[in-house]
Amino acid sequence: MVDEREREILDYFRTKNLSIILNMSLKSFPVIFFNMGGEMIYILDQRLSAQEVVDQKSVKVVNEIVGSMFNTRFLEEIFRPQELYPKKAVKHIFEKLAHTSIMKLNEASMDKLYDLMSMSVKYQIMLCPCAADILKVTYNHINTMRKLVRSFTALDLLDKAFLAFNKFYERLNDAEWLFIRDTTLFFFQDIHIRVSVFLREDLQTQEGQFIMKTNGIVPTGFQPPGEIRTYTKGRLNNTHVFDADQKHQPADDTRTFQLGLNIFSKNRSIKQTILSEEVVRQSTSMVNAASDIEMINPDPKMIAQLNLLSDLIGSNMSGTHHGLVV
View 1 (cartoon, rainbow, N blue to C red):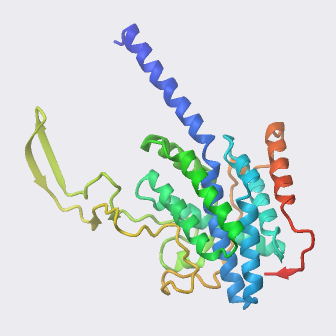
View 2 (view 1 turned 45 degrees about the vertical axis):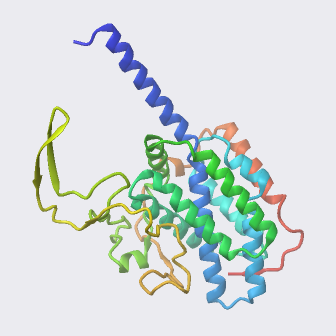
View 3 (view 1 turned 120 degrees about the vertical axis):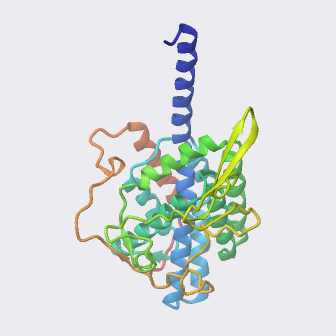
């Protein structure tokens, strides 16, 4: 039987947890934006290289897109606490960003680009040993983009974006990161695009779902399974060792964190690279997530926010563009 005082305590924690969940859901969009933005730069850089586009033009494309993506005024709106946009709206944002450069993408190319961006980030977030490792994934995207940018202006904007991202998320605890991870994966949950590199490496089913391994590196702060310890009054009483039937490695913060690195780079091994990779679309229709369904009664505030973001991107576009079709 729960007395009145215990009931008050339980209600307090339920309310507090709900508050945390709502607060973290409003802070998830920068995670999606930064990581998908990094993947977009990787893919475009690889496509330009594969098509042997003149290096000067290729560099110009990357510099212009990064400069628009991390424009100070634009980022202020990205970091504003807000609900996740519908997938079509997010795709529209990245489409406008891609076209802030001299490059022009047709509809089919943009669809493939966005699908590959989505599946890559979804896989990385799912594979994180612990939710807080999303920070490391984002840091890898930012640091790798720095190596591709050759404009002091764009580099300065990228560095400021890194500081802003760090400040925005630096005080979160593990539970808050879990809520952000859940919100982020909810955004990607019904995207099941088959990608040949994932299929070839047995990381994805023919239905487009990822196959998650149960072995590998354990999260920071955890130990590899294989022992059952019993304690009596806080003291170790007995240890039973068993075969976990899987190969696990202890967490090692000195080991290079691979998730978020540029798998499209020519310097990567054959197994890691996806040069000239094409997205294979499902022949069967997929059930869309709620966030991807046309809004019957759109939120006026969300529409206004999207219009503002669109205007901010548009204001950074060059006056004259020469068509570079990729």
